[in-house]
Image 1: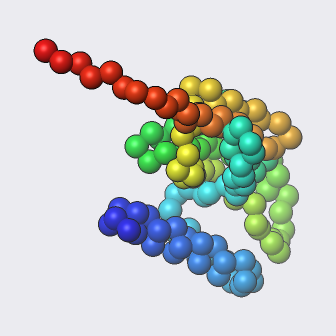
Image 2 (image 1 turned 45 degrees about the vertical axis):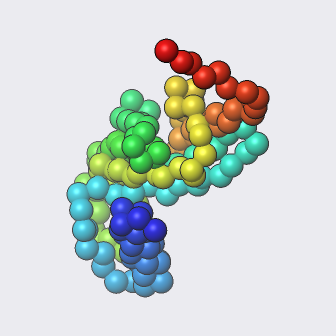
Length: 150
């Protein structure tokens, strides 16, 4: 495994272990490790495309930024989910806070399959962002190749 892939794997596993630890011990207070949070996502394959679903309830569509990162074959998802103004003015106690607000960012690596980035389509509805990422067909043409000579 090349060094870059092993480093990415290490950080991915570390992040997954952190999330698992957070889920197993929800009673302890969480300390923010960075200024943004990561939305939960599903990535699955259909015959002609990959489907990426991100849970972004409360974010406005115009506050979501999507980028295809060709050098890593990944989708970068960034944006902001603002806390609702006025909800906290009459609080006299807090017993549970699990919903994260503010800036979010997540890079989702795609499987090593040719895709067509120019044909990616995104729709935001009912708090879910859904991307359809079409696969690009590999050439199945075979036959003799021309050799040019001077």
